[in-house]
Structure formats: structure tokens, C-alpha cells
Image 1 (cartoon, rainbow, N blue to C red):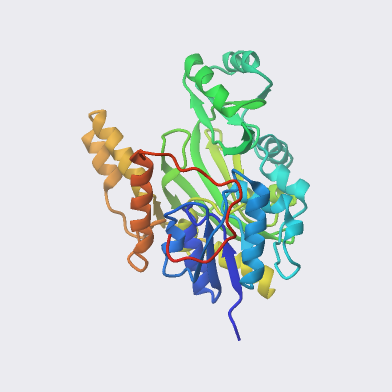
Image 2 (image 1 turned 30 degrees about the vertical axis):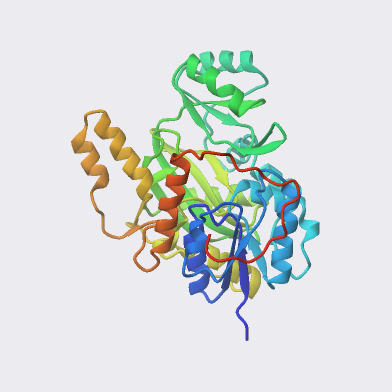
Length: 401
């Protein structure tokens, strides 16, 4: 009997090599699609097929059409989005996918709410979680006035992670503005309406998991040690912990209220008064997925087992497993050296046992090489810009890329 096949989008993202491995080890045939090269997920030895597709940030429909064609031609049982742009494109054009492909997505309105940072504040309050004071700003003057009221530093956020600018889709994260000049400079990039949020002090937590039929099947809780960039960037070092049952109940309540099902990550701040404040929700594969898998919670496999095989596996990640995003941690250490703090830089680079890596792994070394090429390509300017054709070629399987 042929293995059930799963297609991953965004093979260039940090989560892709881990998703390929966890699915392959669970007995699935794995395909990885991407619009960029090199794509570390496509270099993984656990990836069986590789496909080129258009960029969902440039043309949502063309991307969805290409992924649907790959899914149908390759006999894939489901598609797992690896970015907000891919998720929105597939959700908006789900009519292009054949009935044989089980997307497992909630209705389009639910998906739209799940990528809205403003909606998160409402769901969090209903679930009994704290929410940092947040102000919606319609223009530059309102934003500057709100920041003065909240007092610097303040967090600047787009209303949605994926925003439309100049006819293209852009993915924008949060920015910690130290003063009015920094805020004014970043506002045009984020666009309006935007959100300004009071900076909450405390430990950063991540709750990753799988939600299915209103129930939390699997959970991986971790606490952040470092992020890059510091203060408002993605995690570059963290460690799994045992989350309080009361917190997990609130997380389950929040995710169930959104109507989401599938893989997700909720980021929170453990405040100094013992409460937890929700700050971000990712309804898709997320960057530190390697930590969950390394701690015994292979989220992509658990989701596909429920969706495609009708199996409900319940588990929790083991505490005490670390995660390191190596190239981000190297930049962190270099920044400390430039500030004259060699001891702190050495502490950042200290090896740790039981550490999961998104790219650097002995059993699957090629994604680390692809990541190196990826970093060098972004650092070294090209002599001539690439020009995208108006009509992208049909997707096709290729070698590693």
C-alpha cells in the first residue's frame, strides 16, 4: 500500500526541515514546495519530492492554483502551509483544490480572524488571559499621541501579520520603538491602521500544539532565553518547561474560541504579578518547531494522523530540552562582542546538551548547508535584480533547490 502523501509549502522557512522529518518518520511521503532557492526543507533527506511554485506574497491565486495542481497531480492527501501568506492564499482560494485533498481548514472568516492581532486581544480576554494595553491608530498623528500616552518603549504591530502594500503582500512583525523618532521612521513600513501596545515585562513563553475538534491534542511549552533581534524578534534560544494546567486550560479555551484547528503557536509573557499575557498567535507551522519535535511532540505528524488516519494521539513535550537557532545566536554573540561583553558572548555560544536545531543536525546535514547559502545570498547583493515573469510557469518537480 502506498504511503499517504503530505505537501508542505514554504520549504525555505525555518520549520520546513523539522516538518519533513517528523512526517517521514511517521510513515508519510513528503513533498516540499517553495518559491525561493535554496530552500532548506527541500534539501532534507526526509523530503521525497520538490516543487517550484509562485510566491504567495506576489500573487495569491497563482500560488494557490499551483499548489492545488501539485497536490492533485502528486496524489497528496493534505497541504500544510508554512507561512501566513500561504495560509491566507490557500484559504481564500480553497475552491481550486480537489475534494481528495483534505485541507482541514476552518471557514475563511475564522482564518482571517486568526491572523488578526486585534482579534487576539478579544479572544485572550475571554479566555482569562491578560492583554497588554493596546491602542488602534488610524494615522501617524494618532500613533504618536498613543505612544506618548503609553510611554516609550512601545511595541508597534500591524493589524494583521500579512498586509497589502503597493499591490504586493508583505509580512511584517512587531517593532519595539525606543523613542518618537524610531516610531515615526517605522510607521510607513507597517501602514495603517496599526496597533501600539504597552511593553509588558516578564518571561516570554511559547505554547505550540495541535488543536482538533475543539480539543488540545498535543502541547509543547517553552520559555525563551534569547530572541534575535533582542526584545522583539523571533526566539533563538529556549527550553521546554511543564506549563501549569490552568494556563493550558486557558490556551485551549482561546484556540477553541477562535475556531482554529491544526498546528498553532501562542506566544505569551509571564508577567511579574504571576499572570500570562497573550501577545501573538501563529495558526501554522512556526519557527521553533524543532524544539517540539526534539522534545517528543512531532506536531505535523500528530495533526496529519488525526486528519488523514483518524488517529488522536495525545502527548506533551518533555521539559528540559533546549532549542538553538544557530545563525541567529551567532549574531547575538557578535553583537555582544561589539559592545565589549566577551563573557556574555561566550555564554551565548556555550554548548548545551539535549538541544534541538532547525538546520544543524547530524542525521540530516544538507539543510544546514542550504541555510548557509541562503544567508550568504541575502548578505551579498546581486549585480542585477531578478525580473519575475507575468505568467509563472506551471509548477514542476525539481532536484534540490
